[in-house]
Length: 192
Image (cartoon, rainbow, N blue to C red; front, side, top):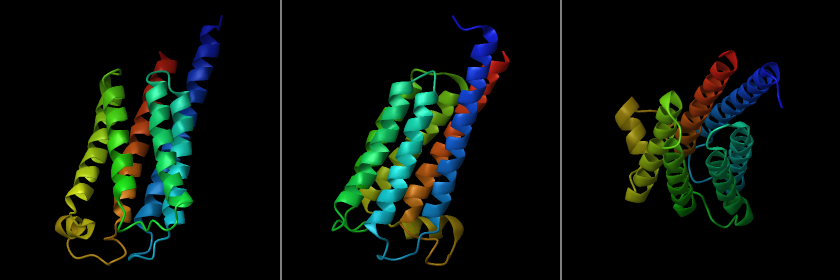
């Protein structure tokens, strides 16, 4: 049976791992935000970003105490969405958004359900992450141009900023922030 010190160390190690994962996903979000504009984005690049985020999220999910299975499943869904882009390079990112809509919808459902099994600020951040994915899926489903949204929120921007890549960036950043909150709560557990 583990001593209190061993459990505390385990919680600290777990918190560090989740923190690193959250920061890595935020960095991936920044990378997605600054992808080149236009229809020249390679499906391999989109796939690689999704696979990387999915693997990181799956590892972070494996470190969680609560809702481990759902957190890991959200990562697996992200990696599978990335594999769809890598395996089928003829599917150009802009005309075929269905894999992204599906990815966002499934992640939303997983995170929303997992949020019902946790409490406090983690529940709030899981809900925000699920809500962001749902909003982005609806925007894509409605065919609303991301450029229109960016211009509406921030005014005229360079074409590079107002690209479809913001969908990935927004989802990744909110997910990364959620993981940082999970890590913070994990550290609080170890200090208790």
